[in-house]
Length: 93
Image (tube, rainbow, N blue to C red):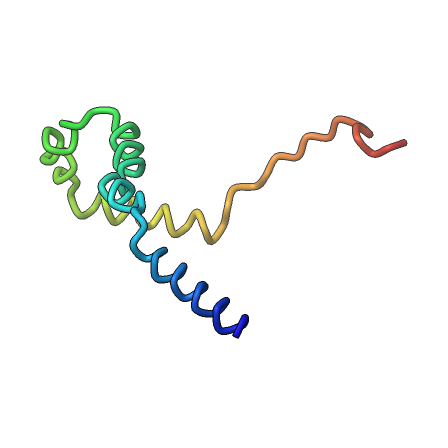
């Protein structure tokens, strides 16, 4: 009898828990605000893309091809790294 009362009480508590008010509507109303704010803060000048739309279209084919060739070549033979030796700093001796 005691176990059945305990189970019935647990079922009632779980059923009443579903009726409890949650803060989810408040959270859902502001979902994604932080991302939108951070994206807006990273944009220095909001009107720049519309104002400079024609400037990016002025590149001719030869210039674009040469730029791509230089870009690909930079991965084939990267520039040599400069090593600066300052003695035995940090070797523990």
